Image (cartoon, rainbow, N blue to C red):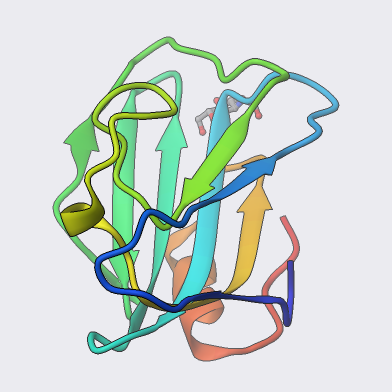
Length: 131
Ligand SMILES: *[C@@H]1O[C@H](CO)[C@@H](O)[C@H](O)[C@H]1NC(C)=O
C-alpha cells in the first residue's frame, strides 16, 4: 500500500482497518512495515519466522529485543492485518483507550524475514525494498 495513508482522527477511537492479504501460499516467514505519523513520530517493522519462532520489532531503523512467538506456526491463506486497535482476543477485544490516533502510511507485507540491511533500508528510503 505504497503512498496510501490511513488517518485515525479521533482519540480515543473505535476505528480500525482490517487488511485481508490474498496469499498464494501459507506464510512461514513474514515482515510487515509501515510508517506512522503521530505524536510519537516513528515507523515500525515487525518480522517473524516459523522455524525459530523469533519475532523482531524495528523502530526507526533500530532493532528492539527479539521475542519468541508461536514457533512452528504457519499463517493460513486467510491472513488479516489489523491496524488502529489493540486486540485482546483474536479479531476483537478492543479498548478505545488502547487505540491509535494519527496517520499510518506505506503498509507493506513481505513473505520473508528481511535482513537487518533491508530493515534499515525500509526505514531510510521511501521506496521500499522488494522481497
Ligand atoms: C523461512 O525462513 C527460514 C529461516 O530463514 C528458512 O529456512 C525457510 O526456508 C523459510 N521458509 C519459506 C517458506 O520461505
